[in-house]
Image (cartoon, rainbow, N blue to C red; front, side):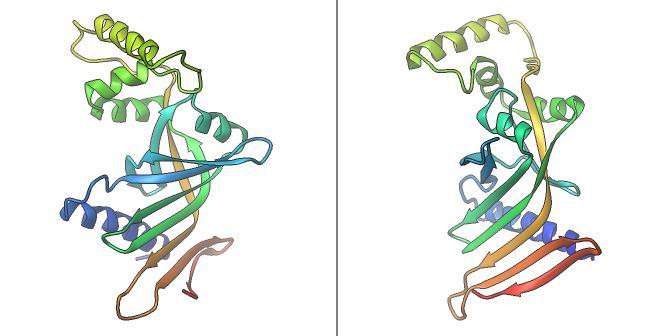
Length: 195
């Protein structure tokens, strides 16, 4: 198995182990982006899938993160599981998925989440929580008699193509273990990092 696939397998294995242990939210990760002026911001997003090309997540194209990724596609994510005593950091470049791929994942979302995506203005200010609730009620009514809620044009997906993957594992008997996979001009390399 090549080094890149080995690193992706470690990500999948951690998520699967968390699922097997019924840990809450095993697919939640922190996503860091940078705006055009270089100001970083971080928020929690849901890791939808780990595919051969990278880590897939979805958002509104009107969201702050999407606007920042349009200005600077460099991004990083961190998955952390305290019960497993593991952390995975991934750095790379995020690229926009095609509309067809976004539609496939849209269809997997629960109806309430789909309606909330329609109702959310993301970066728009709200006068009150009631304003959002009113918008949500309007979309509930709008799509009430439709079997499927269509994907809004502003809902999109990204794939973070890794260029650096660091695996951290805490051990009760030994010092922490850190292994770093790095993309180079010649392929991928792996090094052990001081704990």
